[in-house]
Amino acid sequence: QQQVKQSPQSLIVQKGGISIINCAYENTAFDYFPWYQQFPGKGPALLIAIRPDVSEKKEGRFTISFNKSAKQFSLHIMDSQPGDSATYFCAARPFSGGYNKLIFGAGTRLAVHP
Amino acid sequence: DAGVTQSPTHLIKTRGQQVTLRCSPKSGHDTVSWYQQALGQGPQFIFQYYEEEERQRGNFPDRFSGHQFPNYSSELNVNALLLGDSALYLCASSLDAGVGRGTQYFGPGTRLLVL
Image (cartoon, rainbow over all chains, first blue to last red; front, side, top):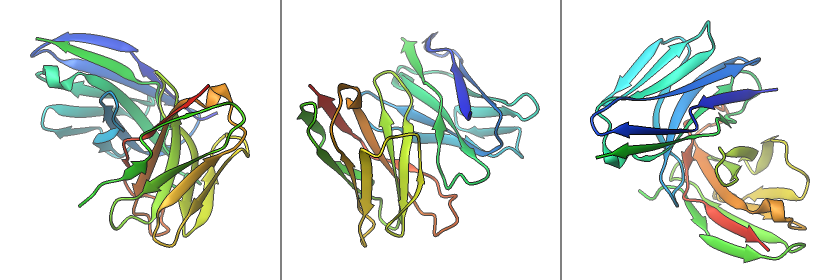
């Protein structure tokens, strides 16, 4: 069964700190790993994405680290700000027959305290 | 450039009723996917439409059906509503051109409450 497991379920970080969210996948080859940010009452918004031939991708304060052998990937938010408080979802797209279907983790609710 | 739009924003129905949700994709996008997001959970893939055909379907019963129009907009229909159908229904559009690899952009969703 295709699954993406995300942890932690919730995270509290002080302003200026580093937020780290982890995801792991199993059993199926995926070729694309996006992270989405969702604010209450809104749809998910694409934050950053990585492909498995790259071990790290950085965009501003957001970095994805990817470990293909361990089937794990993580999101790091540097210098976390109160405005980053949201729910974050990792996702993965199956390599074969996926037709752009995304499989999401359960989400991490991040609260950044001032 | 308008992003993905969905209507209505909120909807209340009773068990056994039928509901239709609508989605207009981002300009230039040709593919629409629908997801169900239960409270506190990640989105779950329902199905995807490309060239007015259902291209792939997730693990959802036949009560869930859809349609894509020539202008690429789409509808999601749910028949015989159950309490468990209460969720945020998300539409995502992408430019796939048949390749199936475009980035998905989500709309704000329709919040459905079944009483």
